[in-house]
Image 1 (tube, rainbow, N blue to C red):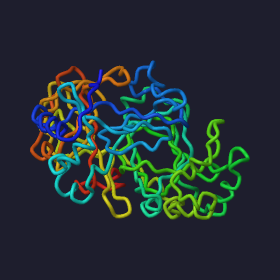
Image 2: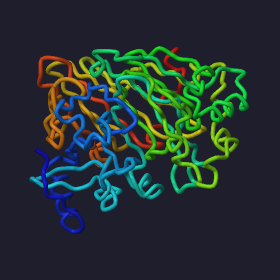
Image 3: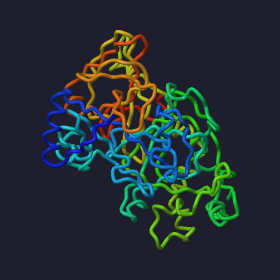
Length: 415
C-alpha cells in the first residue's frame, strides 16, 4: 500500500534529494485518483472494482487518474490533496507540487520555473461508460475573471485501455457551421425543460483508437466513451452547456462553476465565453484531428518514438506528448529537451534505476511501478529505457510548454 507518512518542509527537501539520487533523477509517483459526481466510470483504468467508489457514493465513481499533477481537482467536497500527485521514497511520500517549489530548476528546468513558478500542465486517463455533457473550458481571459487559468487540452485514445467501446464512442465537437449565437442562447433559455437541444447544433465524430484531437479553450465538446489520455494545461475550469445527458440532469451550477457570480444568469455573457470562430469552423477536423507521427530522428530498430499530441493553439505550444514503443530485449536512450510525466500502458522493463510494470489491477491507495516523473535534469542528460518482457513495452509521456523546437503541427500527419 502507499506510504502513510507525508513529509513537508525541510524533511521533504532531504527526502527529495534522496529520491533523486536513488532514482537517478527520476521520481516514482503514486496513482492519483479523481471522482466526478456527475459521471459514470468506464471501468478500464485498472482500479479494483471494490474501489470504484472509494471516496463514497456521494462523491461519485472514480473515472479519472491524473499523472504528474500539481493541479488540484475542482470538485465540490474535495479532499485537500485531490488531484495532486505524490512521489514516494523510503516508505514516505511528498507532494510533487512541493518538490517543484523546492527544486524547480532541477525538476522542470530553469526557464519554465522562472516563467510559471510551477509545473503548469498535467495529464490524465479519462474513462467513462457513456458520453459527458457538451461543455467547454474557459479561455485565459474569461478564467482570469474568477482567479483561474484557461484550459486547452488534447486527446489520445490508447488501444491498451480500450478493449471495449462502452456506450457511445463518438464525440460531439464544436457547432455546425452556420449556427448562430441566438440558437445557443435559446438552448440556455430551455435549460429546465429537459433536453435543451444543444446537440442538435453539433456534429459527432467517431473516435478511433490510436488517434487523437487538439481541443482549444472555448470550444464545445462532449467526449465519448473511449478511455482517453489527456495532456492539458494545469487548470480544472469548465462550463457544461447541455442540460440532460443519458437521462441524467446536469445542474445549472456546472454551467456557471467558473463564471463570475454576477454573471450566473447573464446568458449573453455565457454564450460569449465561446470561441465562436473555432466552434463553427467548417474545417474543424482538418484543424484539430491528430494521428501519430514517428519521430525518425529519435527512433531506431526496436524503438519507435512517436508524437501523439502536438500542435499550436492560439500561437502557443502549451503541451505535447509522445509514445515510446520498445520491442522485447530492446534498449533505448531517451533524451528529451524537457521534463515529462511518464505512464506505462503495456509491458514491463526499466527506466533508469526504476522498474516498470503495467498493472492488471490496482487497489485504491496502492503504490504501482507504472508511473514516473522524468526531471529536466534526467531528461536532458539521457535515461536508458529497457524492455525486459516478452511483449512490447509502451510508455506515454507528456511535456510542458515551449519544450520542443521540432514539434509537428496539426495536419502534418497527412503529409
